[in-house]
Length: 166
Figure 1: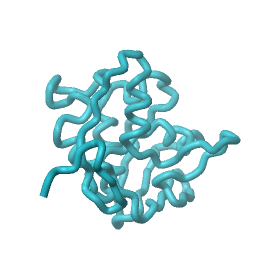
Figure 2 (figure 1 turned 30 degrees about the horizontal axis):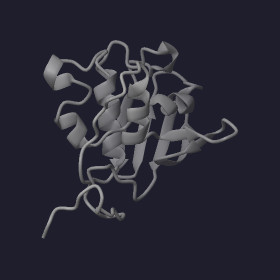
Figure 3 (figure 1 turned 30 degrees about the vertical axis):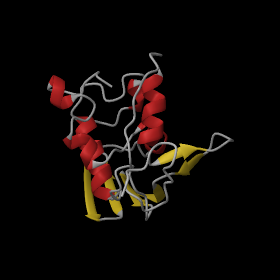
Figure 4 (figure 1 turned 45 degrees about the horizontal axis):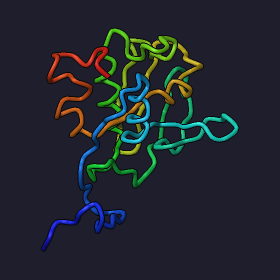
């Protein structure tokens, strides 16, 4: 069977991803567009600027712990399913950086935040102190597949750290 070409390929939900992303736009903010189109986020903003769930279906507070329910059926471009472990991995990887969100350090989570996953669809962010901006910070929290992290993340395998390389 011949491999599909760009002209003949028809992708359907459930199909394995085909091809690769090539970044050719040299604009300094291009990383934002690549990130927003290749990774998931717990929340997005709607047309009124309100926070709405993306891969987060629901959330509630238990003291200073934010409990998040992960939306069922979300898949990454490599075909793997997004679970609470995916979110924990992204959080743990980014928390290794000195400045996880350099464009605005107010968007960084407290460095002593601990995360646990009681099951595949629940994740608990245990903040050392209340964080009223947690849901807004989720707007800049990008979740990638294990394959992304295993194959280099934001440059970690090439540079020894992903700090500042995204």
